[in-house]
Structure formats: C-alpha cells, structure tokens
Length: 116
Length: 113
Image (cartoon, rainbow over all chains, first blue to last red; front, top):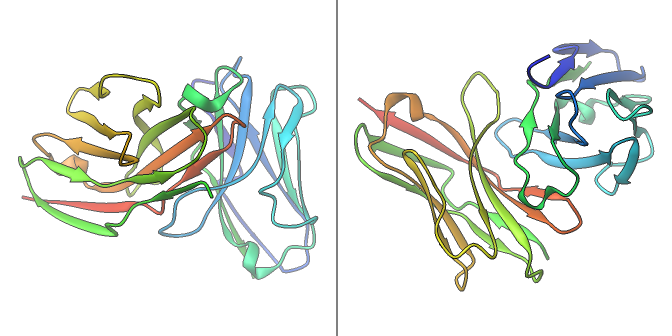
C-alpha cells in the first residue's frame, strides 16, 4: 500500500487477555518503529527493527510486551495478560533506510487499545 | 540525559500571523537530528521539517522554518502566515546515533479566525 497500515484500528478487550497489533510498513522500508502514545502526549519509543533484526527493545515497559518482524516486513506487537494501564494508542512508523538520524518517519494511523 | 522539552502546552494565534513553537533539547552526542511533526485532530502524524546537527543553515519547507540555535540547544518551529488548517498538536523530536527517537510532549496550536 501507499502508507503504513495498522490493524486493527480499535481493539477493546478484557483485562488478562493477550492482544496482537499488526503493522504493515511502506514497501521496501528498512526500519520499523513501535511507539505508545497516551492522550495529549508525544509518542513514547517502545522498540525498533532494521530488516528483521530487533535493534533496541529498551522502551518495552515489561516482559509482557514483545515484538517481532520475522521476514523484515510486517511486524506484530504482542501484549500478554493485558492490564488497564496498557490502554493507549499504539503507533507504528517506518523509514526507508537504517539509521534514524536523518530519516523522517512515516507513521500509521495507530491502533487504539482499550482494556476493560 | 537525552530529552526534548516543549514548554508551551497550548497557544492561540490570530490567523495570518506568524507563530513560533519552542523546542529545546538535551544531548551530549554531537550527531543528532531534529524533526517537527504535526498531529491534527484526525490523529495522523505528519512530518514537517528536519534539521541535522551539522547543518549550517536553518531548514525551510514552504511556510515552515526551523530556527536552529545550536549553542542554546533550541530548535524552534516558525510557521509564517498561519492558516486555520494549522490548528493541531505539534511535536518536536530528536533522533540519535543509536537510532532512538525521542519526542516532546507537544504544543497544541489554535488558529483563531
């Protein structure tokens, strides 16, 4: 597709359930980032990939959060045993080349996650 | 510590006036990039402008310019001749050599008719 695609757009689930959020980056983009954005705040870095390799996962809040990008394209962010504090907008972004220093990121529209 | 600070939570500006959105940053790394993004009420994130730490001239993109003052560690966004469609949340962000990107908390800009 032309832009970064995220699915689902909205996800409502009960506390304790596992959720999987999907990101389909712009075709050919090397780098893929995951962010969490609380209402009225800036995006908070979670993790990122160059190709299929996870380069940095220091932003993942705890071990309930994991991400993968097995073939260097589509990525999945998984949250296990969800808690109410996990409710947020989860955004994915991609950029054409490795090395974010001078690469503007192209953001998806996000997945709004609500934990009941 | 690496940090982006946007001190203006909200701003109101009359249409057609110029507006400056403040951003200061903190890093000890000599190589970094600075970005501004616009987030309208629809929620999308739109890239506006980029400045590299070694760039000698201030970046400009149409009505947007970045007032880069390296010694003061500031990277203010200037929007000339503001329009109603400029009403949005604006985020300043910094990229570092470890490829991590740090965002500020944002400034909500309201353009008044």
